[in-house]
Length: 567
Image (cartoon, rainbow, N blue to C red):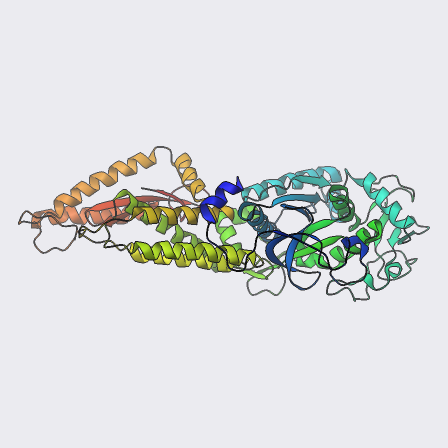
C-alpha cells in the first residue's frame, strides 16, 4: 500500500536523503556487548532519517536492526480514570510519527503497548466504587481504546495487559536476581540493586537525584526500586517465590517489551515525564536481565501539554485536565491532529481555545483551496491566465521540502508550512473574473495539487475524503436539495444581471441593469446571507455559483464550522 502512495506523492528527489544502507556499529559487535552510559550507534540498516535520541541528547541517524522493520514499544495507560488531552497529545504525536515511517518511508512499524491494569490507583478506585480492580480497569481500558479510535490513532499490533503477564514478570525478576542485580527482603519485597551496575545508572536527566522510591527500610540504597512488593490486606495478589504479592511499576514494561521483542529494541516512546525514573529503571532492569549494554537503541519523548498560562502539565492528579470526550464535543479529531502537527513532537505545547482555532483555521484554508480548485476544474470558476509552469515547479519544490523536513526528526511544523505555501501559490492563481478572456485552462495542475495535499494530510491521519463522507451520511438528502436551490438561484441571478442593451455580465454592478429586476438580485444576496449561519455557504463566481455545506465537529448539524462537502 505505501508503495502506491509513494509513487503518487514522493517522486521528487530529496536533498541529503540517501536510500537505506547497511552500516556497521563502532562497537565492533552487537549493542549488547557494550558497557557504560554512552550511546553506541547500532549496527543495522540506515533509514536515511534522523531523530532526536534522548539517550544521546542529540539527533542521530535512525538505524534499524532489520531492514524495513522498526520494533517499537510504548508505555500505555494506567486504566483507572478517563483519558485526557495530555494523554491524547502524546499518543497522537507518536501515531503521526509511526504513520510517517510506514506510509511515507515504507517502514513496517511493529508497535506493542502495555495496559497497566493493576496499580495502587486502580485499587483505590475499586475501593471507592466497591467493585473489583478488574472491573475498574476493564471499564477504563475500553474507554481508552474508544477514545484513541475517535482520535484516529492506529491501534498497536498488540495490547498487552500486566495481569496476563505476571508469570512472565516473576520469571524475569528471578533471572535478574540470578544475574546478581536484585535482592529479596524478609518482608517479601524484591528490589533492584542500583550499586550492582556501577556507573551505568543515570542516562536521563534527573537520575542523579538521591531520593529514591518509598519502601522497606531494608533497601541497600535509597535509589533501589521495587520489582515485586507484598500485597496488603484487600489487595489482589499472585503467588511468587517471595510470597503473595504483585509487580512493581517499572518491571512490567521491561518484561512485556522483552517478551515481545527479545533482547534488542529499536524504539521506545513515551511522555517526557516518564524519562525518569520510569524509563531509567526500565533500562537498568532490561540490561541486567539480558546482560547487555544497550537494550533500546532510541528513546523518543514527547513534550508536555500545558493549559495556556499554567506551568504545570495537564494531569489527573492536578485536576487541570480536559477529557477527550469533552474536547470532541466542541472540536474534531482532524482539528486536534492539526493542533499537534503545528508543533514539534518533543516540544511542550500550550493548549487554549485560540490555539485549537488556529488549527481549525489552517484546515479551513486547505479545504477552501481544494473546493475552489475543484470548482475551477469543473469549469464553475473562471480565472485569468494561470501560470501553470510556476505551479508545477512549486509542487515539485513542496514534495522535496516535505520529504526532507520529515526525514529531519519528523519536523511536522515545517512540513505544514510547506503545504500552506503551496496552497498560497495555488490561491494566487485562482482569482475569479467576470468574463473569461478565452485563455487556455490548466485543470491538471490543480488536480495534482489537490491530490498531493490530500495525500500528505492522509499520511498525518487527516482524511479530507472522510470529511465529505461524514457530511453525506449525516445530511442525507440535503446535498441534492442544496444543488437544486443553487442552480435555481443562479438562473434568477443570470436573469437579474442581464443588461437593458441585451448583453449579459457576471458583475453585480447596477449600471445598465433593468431597475425592476434589482429586487431579485437583492433577494438572491439575502438568501446567500441567510443560509450561511445554517452552514450552507454559497459563493458567487461571476455568472455561476458554487456551494458547500459546513458541518459541526460533533456531526450534529450544519450550523457550526467543521466538516464539509461541496460542489
